[in-house]
Structure formats: C-alpha cells, structure tokens
Length: 143
Image 1 (cartoon, rainbow, N blue to C red):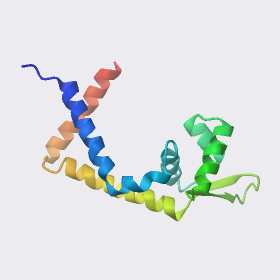
Image 2: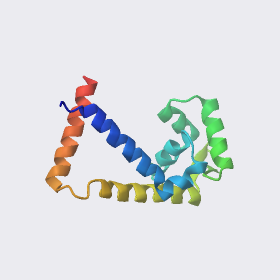
Image 3: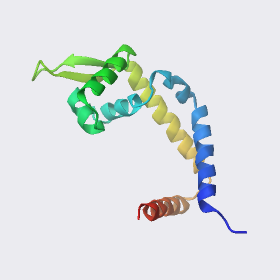
Image 4: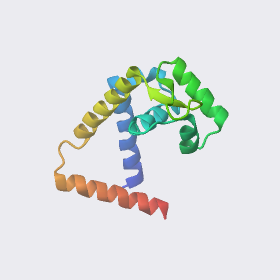
C-alpha cells in the first residue's frame, strides 16, 4: 500500500493544533484575537525601537483607519498604551502593557515546552534531518 505523505503530515498538523489549543496559555488569549496577536508580537520583538501606528500600517499592509481601529480596541482591552514621543509630540508610541507582556511570555514559554515534547525522542541528527526535509518539501510546493 502506498503511503500518502501529505495526508500523514496533515494528520500530524491537526494533532499539533489540537494539542496546542489545550495549552493553558491559549486559554488566556480571549483578549487577543485576529491580528492583535501578530501586532503584539511585532511590538514585542521590536522593543529596542519606538513603534508607531504608521509602522503597524506599513508592516501589516493595512490602512490608517483599520490600524487606528485595531489599536484603539487593543488599548481598550488593556494590551497597549499610547505614549507621547519626546522627538515629535504629534506621534504616539505604542507600548505593551504588563498584561500583554505576560501573555506573550507565557505563550512563548508553553510553545517552547511543547516543541521540546514534540521532538523529545529525536536525536540532534534526526532533528536536523527533519528540518532539512521540511524545508525541502516547502520548496517542492513553492516550485
């Protein structure tokens, strides 16, 4: 009987999605929906430079009005704050709240732990080979 690699990979992907949805950190994400999570991570990863609404518009390819609505909603949810910028008072820097930082840190920690579990019985060579094969399959699909 022929092996259906795509089906096997799809089944594994579905199991991974189900297992990650069970993680405690995922239960705390009720405030973070849609693009909010991506925006939070973007701000978090660029914490060494000020991030403004125009950066969100540019990076995510959204209009000024959409960005404004999303940021206002995130502000109401207590995930970000707008602060005046010392260099230009007209610009409002987007800053993560402690709650947002805690959510991001919890998600990163639990996802790291899940990743460790996922490959726990693989050798370092097998992990490298797995990554190599995944990348090769991704290229096959792209071509």
